[in-house]
Length: 340
Ligand code: NAD
Ligand code: LMR
Image (tube, rainbow, N blue to C red; front, side, top):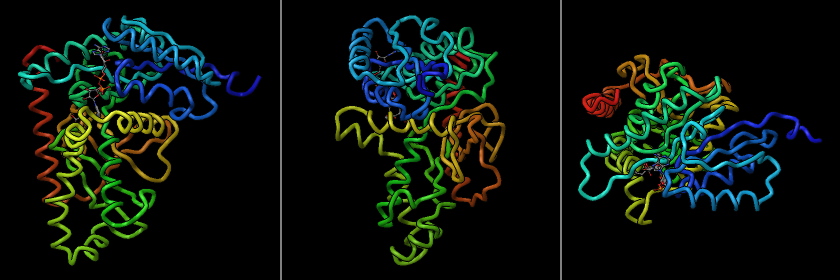
């Protein structure tokens, strides 16, 4: 028996498993891309009744891959069954915005999903459960899920801004003709929405300050600042909408890739760099306590911690405050609905 088979499988629950992101996620998890090549996984796929067939189809295909690391797949439409003993919960399934739906309607519909799922996690998940919320509005859904699981430490919940982080890295690499692997220290602050602040002020390109490299290429510091404000920030923050308009539906494979990277780095560690995730604020950088806001984060394998002590100039402060104000408004709206 090899080492992988001797380990107890990690139970990974994926909600919305019959959807687009689910289909791009499951096979890579089963292949070891998320938890490493030595860790067997047991997959639990949660769907609503209308989505169960699609998830069952994915389960059949998973079986057909004969993955060495896959210890089993179960499909269910019952949240308690899905989260029973879950070590990792990836909350992807959400109610999308449909025609005529106001923002408050979307928040209400998703509160009706993430409240009960959070409660089920609190009731039946493993003691070491870590939760990643992908379904939008991701930050506020994470807040609702965490509030519904008061016995699970609130810092075990996070929302996905790794996709924004990777987009910000890729756009900076493209603008500087550098390899993405040579970009370090990009940060996404705030909400996973158009108000987010993709920040390169502490970033480096092949070891040099990103702002210096941009100034050299664009003809000075002022031109670099203008490009950052007028091109870079809106391009990264608007990338989700751009994908929807070009592809006809929202990002799926890149979102799945980012979700895998988020969990992988949380569990296996970030090494000597940092990444971005929407995690619980305890007041760091003046972000109101209790919100799930995106920060620069590291992990030694035990979960994400916020990188503290970075200097923020007036521009950064203003942009972060604007995005956090949106998070406060979302929180107040779900509070008014009785979801918190
Ligand atoms: P999709 O519509 O293809 O799939 C969603 C699936 O969730 C469907 O199969 C649906 O049946 C299921 N579902 C709905 N309610 C559920 C519930 N209560 N329990 C379990 N399953 C449920 O959508 P998708 O493309 O996979 O995207 C999923 C979500 O991820 C959307 O909210 C999308 O906006 C969001 N998203 C977030 C990011 C990010 O970076 N945070 C990136 C891309 C997409
Ligand atoms: C994304 O960032 O691709 C998704 O959250 C979709 C969206 O609505 O932007």
